[in-house]
Length: 303
Image (tube, rainbow, N blue to C red; front, side):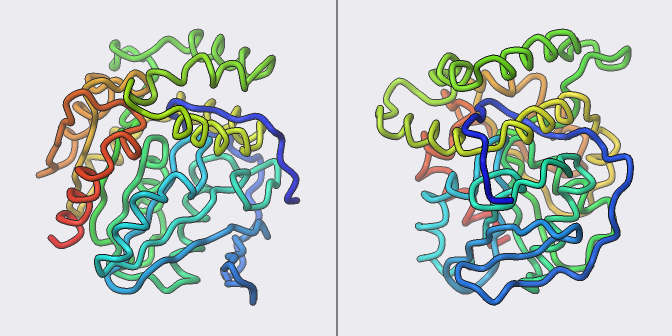
């Protein structure tokens, strides 16, 4: 179950092929091991890291990225009085690769398993890219009351990427299909070819390679199914239903999730949400704008 395909991706990703039958969820538990492992309802083991003590911040990773992506946020904020929690999505990093469950309903169940097992309450959730849909699915489902206090949507792919009669600015489904055909043939090459816009010119070669290495550890099954799901998802109604405080942070140079298609319209659907635009920031602003982002996360978590 821990085997990994050595292919993965960059950009923004999310939602998936719904399973024909969803297994009944058992009570989540933390295995008696270090590092911590949480077992989801279908038996999938999720690798969890928790640094520091204090008010909890849950970091949800972007498409094809593991909890490693949050190193520069967790290291700093865990020293500033926060309990920083992140986990590897199924098929990512050190978590199991069951070859199934790459749909938002199952992923929301995984979020619930982690929050319940660690008994997290009043958390600030920081959701990058496709994971905005995960936390929305969690909040819209049978979420445990009081576990999430506020949500920061970072470089989100919300609300709806696909072109529809009522969403003419979206991307045609055929364009997404064509992109996924590249995944089947040579995903590492696709990563490399799309890596420059993910960061900024000043980003060091080693930092760029570090991000690629994280992505190369992701299951190809997860990469394809999550991309297929993300590009078909429509979270407009879910955004309108949010009742917790919401902050959107987005870069105006985000080539993976262009501001005009994602962060701007998404923030307008949430009552009293705030949108903060980082000038010159790309999709990978978690490594290109570390200091500013950490300050904004800290300030939001203290509201």
